[in-house]
Length: 304
Image (cartoon, rainbow, N blue to C red):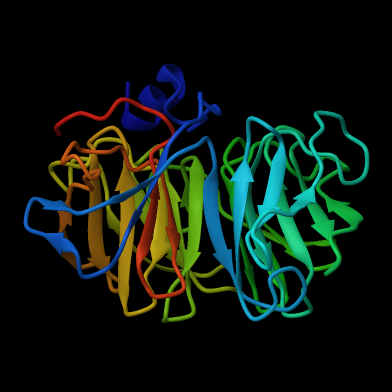
């Protein structure tokens, strides 16, 4: 049995990650990382926080709190208490089922990745639902997205590809197909970020690698990889810091791995909560000040 067959038979090729019990998140500020660890400020609750820029809710940049269990997205602009989107587990326009990400375009429209309904919900700057993406079956298991230069790049883990939409929700193209050999092959894409180089950095959970593509879908390079980076176990999230560095969160190993955009490995650190206990880096986001936000998803942390 070759490696491709093994991945398919064992289910690792699918790269499916279910939405687990959610609680607890932490914020890690750049510059606090030290050899072997980093100071982390704890934020209580079941929410994951994302930071976006643009007009509309939270003009001139905003933080949104996503609460998958309560099916809500809250805008932290203004008095910090307004709920932008209502809770629901149905499929009607504007209704959400386990939202896991949110991003804004330059016109102030908010795009919410609705994991449970396999769609992206679109809201106008006033928070009113105006449309959906993927409702015709274009999305199967969306795990992450990037809104970039008039395009929405969505990691569809189940189909092993990146679906590319315009901001009106039309499917423009796809990037990748199932495979384990790099190039245009992907094995469970689960997270995506745009680097300073303008390229798409796509984390595939099946191989534990980051595949780099141009925005047009041409392969550029790959880096990381289980077996290549010795203490990488099952990475799940990738984010560009905006200074030429890429962070990869590995909850199974309890580490955040750091690379250059060119793929050179710079090392890893273990995010710690205020008590000094390691926290599990399930999902990463970039903060407005250039820091790294780490969501631990309620898992019990452990030493790698």
